[in-house]
Length: 351
Ligand SMILES: [Zn+2]
Image (cartoon, rainbow, N blue to C red; front, side, top):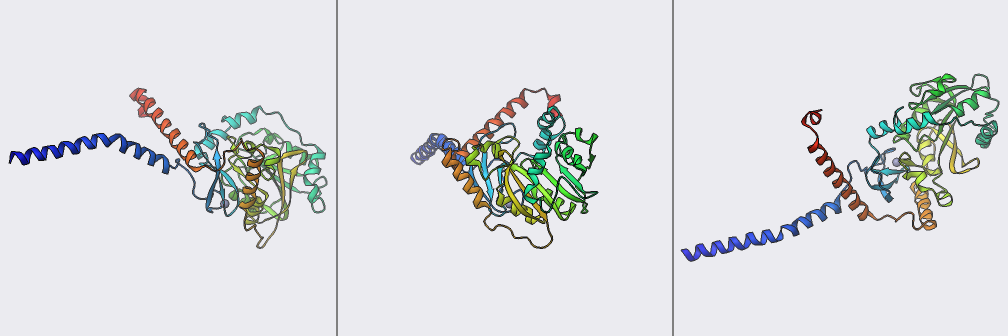
C-alpha cells in the first residue's frame, strides 16, 4: 500500500510541476491567440451607409483621440471607403458641438467669400439647365453645413432665396433663413453639400432626405476630398485618414449613393483651381436610376495607384500587424483606465 501511495504522490507531483512549467507557455499562446483574432470595439463588418459587405483595404494610422488603430475599409456594394472603427456618436458629438474641437475652429474661421466667377465655374457643367447667376423668381437653395455662409452669400447676391442648416455655428443665420432639419416636401431648386459628406457616418440618410426636399429637375452640388485623383495630389490623409474625414468617396460611390436617393450624377470633376477637391453635380429624377455594379473597384484602383506613387506612405493591407497594434492599444488603454480609477477618490468614482 505505501508503495502505491508513493507512486500516486510522485505522479501528482510531476503533473503539478509540468502544469507550473507550462503556465507561461499557455499564457503566451493565449495572448498570441488574443492578438491574432482581436477586433477593436466598434469595428464594422457592414457598410455604415448601405449595409453592404466590407473589405479591409489598408491600415489606418492610429489616432488615439478619436479612434483606435484600425483599417481603411471599403463597401463592396456602394463603394465608399471609411475609417474602421468609426468614431462613436459621443466622439462625433464632442467634435462638432459649438464648443467641440471642430465647432471652435469654425467660430474662429475667417469668412471665405465665394466670388461670382467661382459660382459660375462650379455650375458651368449644367449651365444649359441651371443658370445659377440668373435664377428664376423665387428660386430656393438649401446649404447643409453652411458654416459662415460664404456660399449662401454668393447665391443670395444673385437673387436666390437662401436656407441653411448648421449645428456648429449660427453666424450665417443673421443673413439667411435657418432650418433645424431637412424638410420632407420638395421645396428646393438647389441643395448644396459643400464638404459635408466626408464628416458624416450616414451619408445615404442625408441624401435620401435631400431626395425628398429637392423638386424634380432640381440640382444637388456635392463637394468632397478628391479620392479619384489621390495618387496625383498625394494627400490620402486629407481624403480619409485625418481626424474628421471619416468617409471617402470615389465618383462611382457618389453615383451609387446619389442614385439610391433619386439623383442622377450628370457631372464629376475637380474643383475649379483645386485638384484636392471633387465636385459632383446631380439632377433630381424620378424612376429607377442605374447604379455602378462594381462601385468599390475605382476606390481600390485609386488606393493602388496612390500606393504605387507613394510606396512609403501606406504599408499595404497587412491585417495581422493592424490587429496586433489595435489589441495592444486597447490593452494599454484599459490598463491606464484601471490605474486611473484606482487612484481616484471613491466619491468621484461613484459619479
Ligand atoms: Zn455601402
